[in-house]
Image (cartoon, rainbow, N blue to C red; front, side):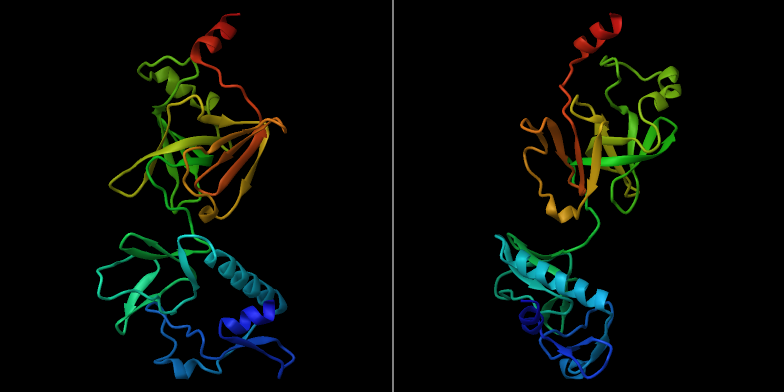
Length: 278
């Protein structure tokens, strides 16, 4: 399968040297607007790329992943850098992420799968950082406790901010935050705590703000954090799952952070206060 896949993508394995390498045979032209290594496709034919055994395995797995993704619904085909993307130029279309106009053709600038949403055409990269959207459920790790805020690492280009005023207090009472609340911030979240929250908005400087105003959000304990590629987690109506047969909770963060932990019954504020008074 690996050999056929490599050949189908325009590569052939050369055995003329003790060091294994792949040669371009014209099926793929590794040229993009970011890095032009040749003026035309003819110059790329016969280009030798020395690869180690580990690199060969990784390259083959990447191609196999592209092939599997291309069979999914709402996807046209898998593409690599500089592959032409078929579009109807008579109809208006919008160029999205991972595409550029090169010599009158729409070509890919990243490896991935072509996606079409109405008139928008873009390439969904195989491995890319998380791109937040308002309302996304995310799981993050606290990296700093600052003035009236926590900073969380959520697999984004910069840390997200969770304001003290954007979350429910432990007593469940809606009230103004006081200086005492600020002093006790570490009793709520501290460094390296795993927290579940929701994307609230973007600031003018590009920073991301979170909120945790529901009982389902907050600190996560007695579990394990798993990290996967963000593109594997699609937005859905339900990101919180209770697997009754195993007695565990599963939280699918849109940022690729998955939490698997012991099941915790939701507690309303009244029950919390009664337990505290007892």
